[in-house]
Image (cartoon, rainbow, N blue to C red):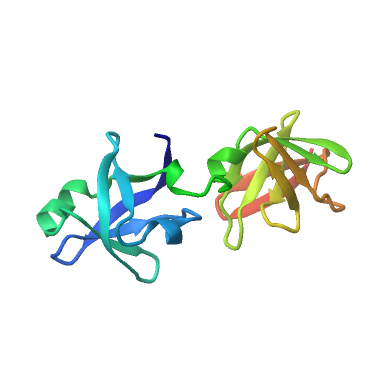
Length: 179
């Protein structure tokens, strides 16, 4: 079984074992449904979701066998995982994009070193010769993802990729500075 990181239990809510989940997982609407299986902690202990509801920034879950505040406190701060096979075979996870080669109509751009979470969308941080460029991970730019050949095809517009820039990333801010 291959596990995908989904999020973390950040706290409890109420006295009936309800758990506050902090997650930016792209497919959590598919996963956080009644009777779905999730796995907690380093040992990946299986739990079945009994109920789900949404609040402002959190998903609230009740799990089978966790029906009191005492039991909920025992699993607080645990990381949550999902079985990759639960999702469609064509589902592309953020983890899949790391180390993929990026190409445009002009040729090789670089390798995805990591993803940067943005407010509206995520960015692929593409590195070549220690120069990092950010490509918005949206359909307007990312035209094709070939998992089998570890290849991403992007639509390059003027100013998107520039080997004379150096990107300095500060949380919630991106500054471009000339070399």
